[in-house]
Each structure stands twice: as structure tokens, then as C-alpha cells.
Length: 88
Image (spheres, rainbow, N blue to C red):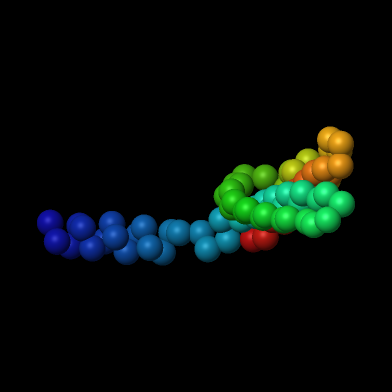
């Protein structure tokens, strides 16, 4: 029984694909609030693992999850910037 267990374990270890085709996609969002006297910024980020996507699909994912917007309400201005970068 021990031999079977170690054989299965060795098979699993050697069959693992080191280049799994997965990407770590880090999205960072920065919100800046400005008024006529001061500015305040806050950032947060999250990492998503994306697998089974082609290089073109992963670059499209980056483009779709990157951008900026602004909103003004009276003297307050809210700027939001979202950047996504995927790496293997």
C-alpha cells in the first residue's frame, strides 16, 4: 500500500506543469478627492488569477480593466484611476 501511495505522489509531483498558462492580474484603484484647499488619495489593489487565456485575451482583459474617470460636484473633484497588469 505504501508503494502505491508513493508512486501516486511521485506521479503527481512530476506531472505538474510548471508553466500552467495562468496569469496573476493585479488591479489597483486609486481615488483622489480634491477641493480648492487640499487633496486626499486612497489606493487599493486585488489580484485575480486568470488561466486558459491566450496572450491576446489577457491583454484585452488588461485594457478592459484599465481606465480613468472624473466627477465634479461643486468644488469637489473625484478622480478614479484603475490599472490592471497581468504577469505569468
